[in-house]
Image 1 (cartoon, rainbow, N blue to C red):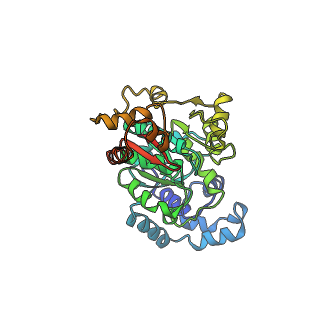
Image 2 (image 1 turned 120 degrees about the vertical axis):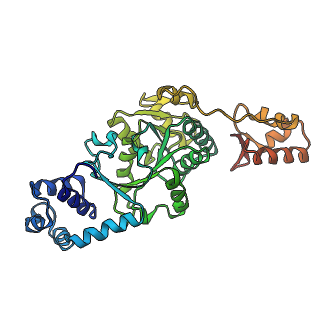
Image 3 (image 1 turned 90 degrees about the vertical axis):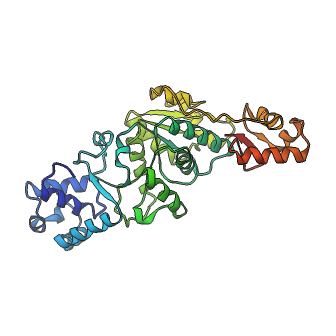
Length: 359
């Protein structure tokens, strides 16, 4: 922490041990006046600010050795605590009315102040939603824009993984503490993100996720981003919270249109229709707004005539395998062997439901 009085710094570290609201923490700070020593804190009538049980608990832990142990525990796990009073706190968050007071971080802190796009959406994407999320995440990350998401199932994890795959930078904002990664199946993904990206949480490391913590963390996803892209989401999806925060914070909002009969495109189609989001049909729609001259260039592959026959059929969108076998002009054995080679070389992806898409 930079340019902070030592007593104030230690008091902030102490406050970070408790999951109080920003308002409660601010009230406690104001009660301290100009004296931020623990001795002064223990003399306060804290019950006038927080409930009696919490006041008693906080005073029981208001000891120098407790703060030292807390600091050592964070340092041992390479967790950095930054507060809104620090110079390295993201400037995009500082100006927000509901700015978090603390951020626990693991990884590259510099990413917090770089151009960033949040990519969010349904936890159960359709094959179409998966393909467009992968494609846009790949090209935007390849163009040097930081990808922000929430480490959740579906669109979130797809965006993180595709970003890492192309060597891009990604930030995962958690709805829990670092010791309670949720979902637990994404612990490995979180570990990969830390190596070149950043994990962020406003919650102390041992804090478990709750049904309230996810909508709350969505304000941070929107807040540290310059724009929010929704690739696919139901009209009642929790993604709507991120969209609402983006509107409140005057962030650019982008949405990918989908089938009008598909429930998983209900939210994206609705906000496009209402004029709340810019319609995105290709990565360039976003890159132009970010003043990126060159996006990531797709790899150029040498294809055999048989491979080209399959690729040609996929140029205008994903297709069912039955359609490809009937229209590619190849025998079944030849088709299968060429399709397998295209998949191994990363040119196509097999999707659930017998669908195939170009990467």
